[in-house]
Length: 304
Image (spheres, helix red, strand yellow):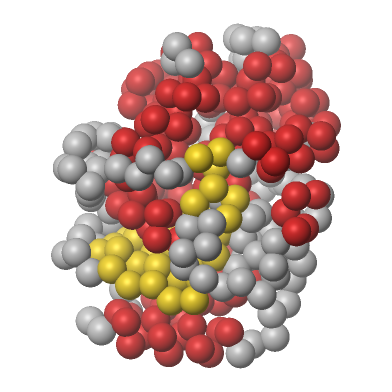
């Protein structure tokens, strides 16, 4: 498979499309990003790596970080984690209060804002220094000490995060948040502010293509069963209200973020990261979704 030739061809085609969509203006700091940026990076289990475009530019991975916080919490708590958060697609907005009320404070899945808040609460209870320990976990998987939070983005999210405050307090009222909501929210806002580039993101997520083993040093991050379950959740819940369409058109587990990043995983084969900041109406990268649809079409490689 000539990945380089295929990626070059699709990148050129997608770059010349009208770059539709809008920046995530509800987070003020994300409006400052150049909307023309577009990067792609692939890492394969047989050690091929290739990037094109703005693949070395750092960006805010936003909700993609929810996969990482879930992975750490799952490795600590095991199957007990599913007593506090579900595994079903939501069918409603990622920040819905109505659904959370109906479900008595148990979020439908860990990639909703409410679900990520519960996961954040678990980590605060289990980690001695939550922000530092989580960052160390992310760095240890990738063997990259340069990955860090963006204080400006976390502050920007904190300043406009009223809906997340409401979600956290509603969950607390049902007893599914154990810690002080302000502490949970502070951790959550930092979690979403993680910055990295396409190369770092692709390399970092290789553990989900490698049966739970870190590709950097073959350390066990998750069991094979846990890795399978996280991939299943990304397949069904990773793209807000566009998860079904992503499964239909792309056919890979993946996760998007409103910073314009997407990570997609082909178990036992590769990970591919795409970044382009303009978002379609469903909150996913316009160019990123187009690129990945064309990529699995041309390579004929999806999980189906």
